[in-house]
Image (cartoon, rainbow, N blue to C red):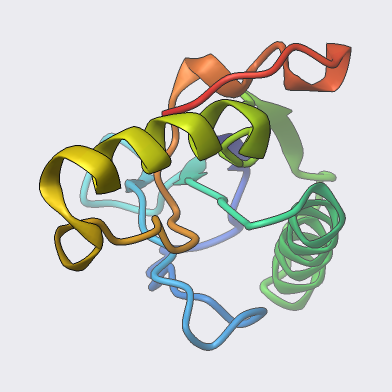
Length: 138
């Protein structure tokens, strides 16, 4: 998740949606100021997920670029602050762990009752040690 803070020059409104990946449902809170008058701050929290680290990095860079350009276009005088709140690698099951389990399930329940898990935007902390080469399954 990323928290973006900026200082709009006048009253501000906005919609958080994906301008990077059309099928991505990018959602998160968008808080502008603490009064109905002209706000002095704006915060946008975006949950970014991807099937690969390469794509994730591209999306994050695009979001940062869009925030900076939109801030400048809106007359924001200060550079926005962009902060990563939390990060977990994409969830990718280890085939060497899933394979034997899948075979056992097929033996017990039959091949027709067992489907391979398709890529999903699920996120869990079990993927955090993956960059260290630690295998896991979800």
